[in-house]
Image (spheres, rainbow, N blue to C red):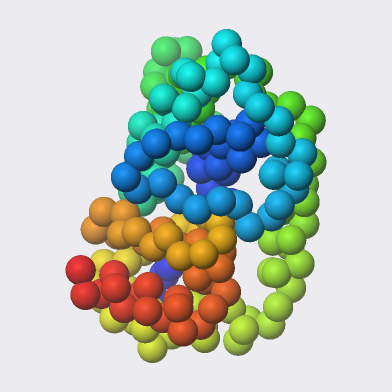
Length: 200
């Protein structure tokens, strides 16, 4: 059994951070909860008026596209072709788009990302590293193995964790499951989320 746990989905992080750091209030039916780490909130400021409307309007579509891509099985041969291949620039760009999926940068420049983003990322990565020091038997997938096996037998190959508070569990196509950090850290809630994939 091979399960990939993607707990550093950078393009989802970008969107979550932009929403929080710039006090965006996008509207939509199925938007994730706020970030667990309050750093982005504590240093937030209103988005520039010239950008706010466009950013808020685009956010839900970018989120849906990035989320859909996060649940797709990875084609590792793309990276081999990018690294080893003698490709034309246009083919390189096309393969990169296929590999990474939709991103904030597809619609906007880098003006939304400043030193606060780097500080938040550093803080979040340090927390992830600390979490990885736990014993193997304490890994959420080991703890919830009884719920994980039926989900895997039902096609689950990828678990995507977003650093959000509360519950926001979504099935991502035939092979992916999105959970929040809060869900994955609570064995009973995580087992329920895995069972939900199996029952779909």
